[in-house]
Length: 174
Image 1 (spheres, rainbow, N blue to C red):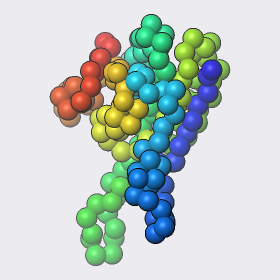
Image 2 (image 1 turned 120 degrees about the vertical axis):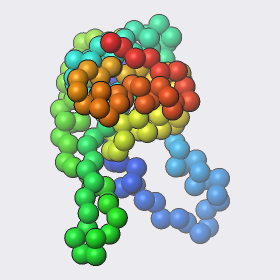
Image 3 (image 1 turned 90 degrees about the vertical axis):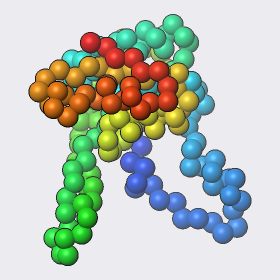
Image 4 (image 1 turned 45 degrees about the vertical axis):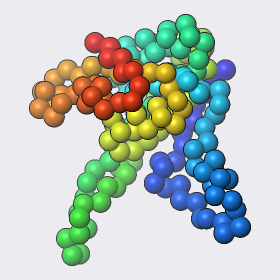
């Protein structure tokens, strides 16, 4: 079973509360995810060489454990200020068509035929979003590629920040 899912970012999905609905029903719809991917392997993927290595490792890990693969692409968000009144920064979604392109490439990839997988798009901080997806799916592990370069040295790598704050095992692939 191969396929991909590109849900709307969480901040765009605002459900109107039904005054007649029970609180339990609202809680179930907010955290619903495909049960086939419960206790799966989450992998951060952006198409880079290090994320491709992480994806390869995650595929093998999911195959060996008989679980599903949750591929997460975190879209760019940029802070912007509202000009009138100089209000605090607001995060605006930048159009990121890479998720669609990555989804099409992954759908055509032969190496993903071994495991069931989904592609989840999120917007925001990469570390926070990977951990959030891991929590939603009760993932057994999060797999990420290591960051090489000046930006990772200055701001700290995603892998390092995620390993310090995650509530589940983080596997960093060099």
